Image (cartoon, rainbow, N blue to C red; front, side, top):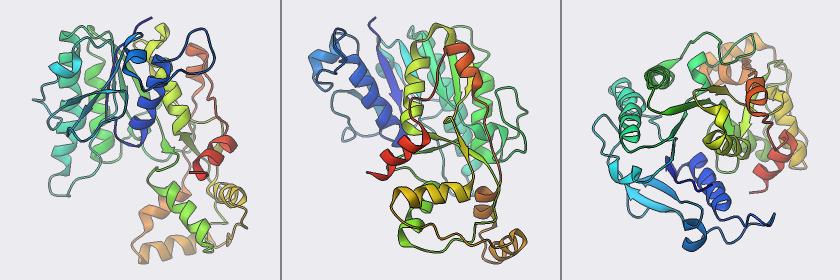
Length: 326
């Protein structure tokens, strides 16, 4: 079936991987397991296209159509980007802003900008709208497994603005809306605590985290983009919300040990008592970083298997090997 896609946030860490996967699928030979050349215009046009919304003409991905869009907000004109599109995958979001204006800007982009896109998508005849939200709508730590119906507890304007966008999207009856709530996403070129831990392990720096017993769910970018591909087309994904993660959760010490093992190094974990770690990180102004590394956040993503029959294609070991090899 011919499907035309629009991807926002396409030049980011997740978006670029997703576009590459979509292009490969669009150009695949249906009579062969091997992909044809995914970057030829003719190959893509036979089965649909992948269009990306970019901020500058210099931003492009070979094989994808590019449309330049102004700043995302309540007045953005998406009409040219939405022409002939069947499925929108909305990845673009505001994450960082100076403190004095960040609350307003988060809602302008993540809430009002999302609803503006959905309104114009419906007017353009788009069938499905896939919104990439965040597990942060449930907070960033929990003693109990998080699932789609867990209480909302967003921390900060990012989670709050994403949650409000979800609420407004659910009121729409003119689009098939699917919401995806991923946790920390890792992979080659990712940002955040994961690459920081990799750098510390590679540097051979002793880490005072050996006493931690937490468990956290993460999501390999390869698993996420495969899941997004699935919900773009699966008939039972329409109107659904999914909490999604890798098959396994892992403690911070086990993650460090796994990284060290994959790098052929010895993990250097020191069993420093937690009360000392809390006190020292507070003095150093790093208590928030320590809290994120030491608390638990386990996701229950069984709903994706029950409704879609989906399981993450990459195990943690495979994902870690791919991540560290780049």
